[in-house]
Length: 321
Image (cartoon, rainbow, N blue to C red):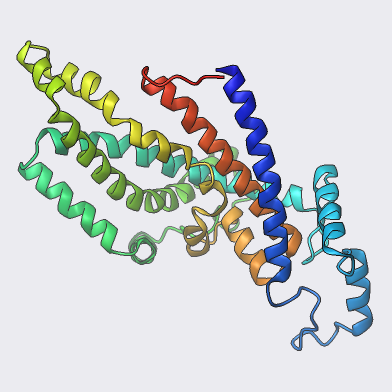
């Protein structure tokens, strides 16, 4: 197994290098350059453009630009086109803001989807099953950003409680306990709204997979032998129904980069998704390339985690070296 992991990691590193080269080429070939004269900024002169291009090696051949970017990224000296600030510290600061929303929404999605989906499958055709199906399709059909705006209006108008931003304005000097509770409150609504759509979709997948597994011969045999229903559902059926979700679980990691960009914009939350969106608008190549590189690395790491989890969930699968 360790030989498989080592070989896979080396393959993923080579693939990550290829992805970074292709991303670098695509971004630099895209129309619009960060050093174009902006008619809305009269202070930007032609001489300033020349200095910027020289400072960021934009006049060098493509392969040299890539090497400069890779070197600066590895040494931590990569700076933003937009404001000249180091890229990695800014990404780390935004990561610390994005992670709580990502962790809370993921926890809500996976802990609520499975009980809802399993009970709908076990009680197939019941009022509970029909009700959760209608509610799930309603949540899938209605845009989550629309529900978010409605919830903001409801909370602010009726309860006069601020929900925008990472904290309430003016609480910087408040007591630590109050600041902590205020931060938790500002985290609850974006996390819940981000999780709603995931719960609706994932619970339907769980129900569909469980309905299929519960109809298998070995499940009927276990019931015929008098095995307790909970053991049949949660030990025999659920374990075999988990395989498709292992793949989905592996693709959770890239959600750290852009999974919550809509909610970060709606709730004015300074996270990674919002940082990437602002970098695209500003044509901030170093920031865009670095975020894309991190997203690719997280995706490849998630696939590796999925491969390992397959062997944990299903003993029939063996990871050979």
